[in-house]
Amino acid sequence: DAALDPATVPEFEMAVLTSSSSGGVEFGQREMASLWQNGPRISAYQSIAWFYAATTGQLAIRHGMRGACGVICAEQAGGLDTLGHARKFTAGDTKVVVAGGTDAPLCPYSLVAQLSNGRLSTEPDPRRAYLPFDEAASGYLPGEGGAILIVEGNRAHRERGAAHSYGEVAGYAAGMDPRPGSPRPPALARVIRAALADAG
Image 1 (cartoon, rainbow, N blue to C red):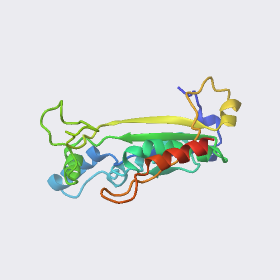
Image 2 (cartoon, one colour):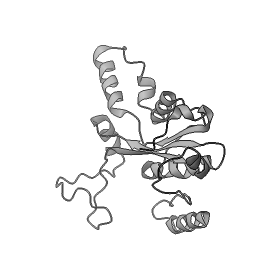
Image 3 (cartoon, helix red, strand yellow):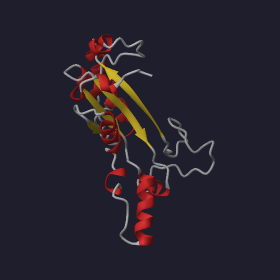
Image 4 (cartoon, rainbow, N blue to C red):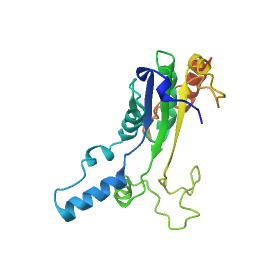
């Protein structure tokens, strides 16, 4: 949709930033089952496929993007955090950043791992299983999805004659709430003020 041809941008001026709370867990589950059932002969890709950095690596390799690439591990906020960092990258020598978040944690291996944290909803009624911000909330439900955006600095965007843009990352800030029961206040108000100040 951005009509960007990576071949027209110097390879060290393109970056990739992605976020994910886990990698290819379904692939990893198949390989572990094979290991137990068939002995020590598993795919060489097992070493990277389960890894949350695999998306960044595959995008960078496939499209020849050799700029500053990275991975952000921030759970639900990760995809948005990549956009804030992409803005910082494009303020420097980076012309293009492929940024966003993906997650695909729906397989038995992943769900068993999540059950151990005690926060996964066990409500059997689908209509009541996920009720965020409700007194009857019983936990979270994992989902699958993703969004990847092309982030460019204003000058690079104009120079290549891009037809349109969907928005501007005008300001960014991040924070971490204190643990439950802490006397410290939540971070949200402070983060909002910092992002607005950053945007001017």
